[in-house]
Length: 286
Image: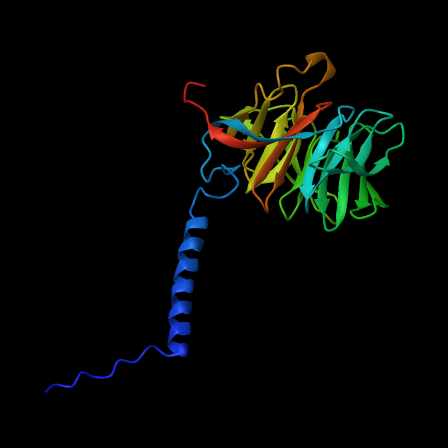
């Protein structure tokens, strides 16, 4: 007669081990599902990995903006916008809450000064003025005036590439300034197929390129900072809602890039909104 071996129930430790393996397997597949490309909250990258020569846009978000702010310079840093606003008697430096549009911190410039471009450098904010040939350097945190400097041209836009400050003066030239001496170390002319592009205004350094508003147009030009050659154009025609009275606003001006979260913001002088946009390919015939 064959004796059937004794059947033993799995031990408590074995059951716990099996349960752990099952739980880890479930968690793994949940994580894979949640991290699938395209499942993030952001519907599209602001800056495609490869930009075509002529780009359009898609509005990702719309935020309130002081309609009395004559925007001349705009940057994004650690969750806040910093803005330079122009016009004599109304020029200022501001720290602004993006979501509410509330001005959290502000310093006004004296009446003769017409504020222009703005950039961040080494815990300071550097601000240009238009025709006064004077720049101001403020402490990032309390807006205390740290220093002033001079330059021989008009001051329009300002950004930096991590090595030098980059300034525009309304012509077709970009000036590269030593951030410590504020002296011009080199300059390039912005050109498209050997034709100069003039009225280069507000600047933003984005992923190795200089994005620049072209004054009195609805276009941003993309510039190679080494050569000045035009890399492409971004057409923002129709960005303002149709119900905005064109008499109450001025031109497109203001570019800020949040490199940490890949967000691109644009606005204009006296615009009631700041827009987060994503760049899209335009049809070839545009």
